[in-house]
Image 1 (cartoon, helix red, strand yellow):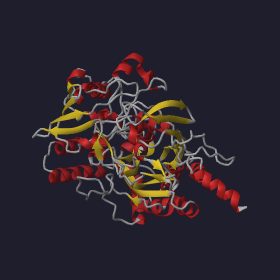
Image 2 (spheres, one colour):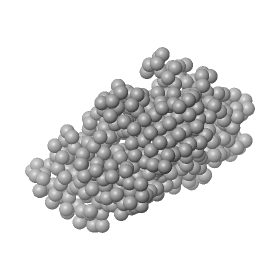
Image 3 (spheres, helix red, strand yellow):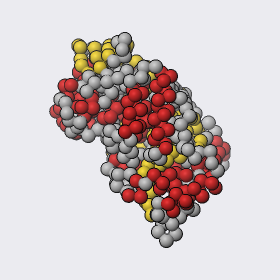
Image 4 (cartoon, helix red, strand yellow):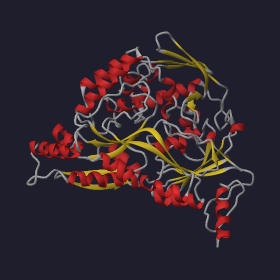
Length: 536
């Protein structure tokens, strides 16, 4: 009985290198001598367009297809990408990037104009990019995005084919980090102007990164293969990747165990101990710059406009139970938004009630609700909208129970991840459960989300002139220590307003076959396939 099982496991561990097949291992055949990866990626991408994407699951694929001026090292730190070097003016406002010789996957040269076109496209109001607020760091970016200035006013110009100059609104020493984000990737103007939105379809898509798109079967998988035009193609080990939507993480875990998947980007937190017992070496929990939080729709939901109600709802959440009993994979209770480990920050901001016991918080929450007019004869009723991931559903159910304990009646509405976030962006929700993963390692990646002019990603529509003024002051502060203190004051202002309810600092929870090499701990939780290979 043991020998056949042993043979199946060995076959699964080959990860497609030899094309080994078994009736119990359902994975596509891999060409002899080639390395293939079967990659579980949580959710179906809504788009693979760098300038209109939103979700982490989209960025994982796009980041293997495309490359910006800088790119992620295996540990997530910035490396030269399309730019080989750069210089900065004394005032920190003008950055000059020197581009390498590179080609799109169709053989057309990648030039500085492709970056200028991308940034104008990102800020064009017609594009309606959810990440346009990041690009407002470019000179005149906000005015262009507001439709008050022409696209040509954006602070990006091509000095020549291999020299790009960016002019900023304010100094940003974290710019090399920011430029790794997908919205700062170049755009193939020669294809987009010909095909419009259809440029992202297989057969049309051209990329400048280590892989190129060859297939996308909705609901099933995205397929990419090595891009021979990539400047470092000789050092890319993997020849083909299938990315699968794996919303059912327990099912995905079993597929990894059977050898059908080599990687899955998450596992259910409370199964960590079981996974370690049955799949030694597969689970890779690690600290990551991410925070789970509850967003309150303060624009459209009248009860949530009341500070007392928001504070009561936040106080009533038992974060110690959620992290210590429900999740159990290293998550930490969160009482502020910026998670531990973020660079350039002075920690100290926290909810004013964070030191109180949970019992005392429940008492205060009931009193706050009563003061706002809610109680047994007039209960507060809300709907919690969440994605259909099992981890998010567990959070929703725990919060639902906590709110019931203070007299709040909350129902849960589950949606596919893309549908849920589209609803958040359109304010078609009352309470949303979501997480924010750092786009770059600086407090502004978290705090900037809640600026009044951020747009769709400020899901709760928090608006505070005092908060905005502090962020603006921080943007123009050149002393790093003083900037960190200003940002901490800004976060305290937002927390005092109960703009959102931080729940837990997350951990990355990847399942990775031990034969895969190049997978390193990364605070940004991006593991570009360019660096991966398989032990033979």
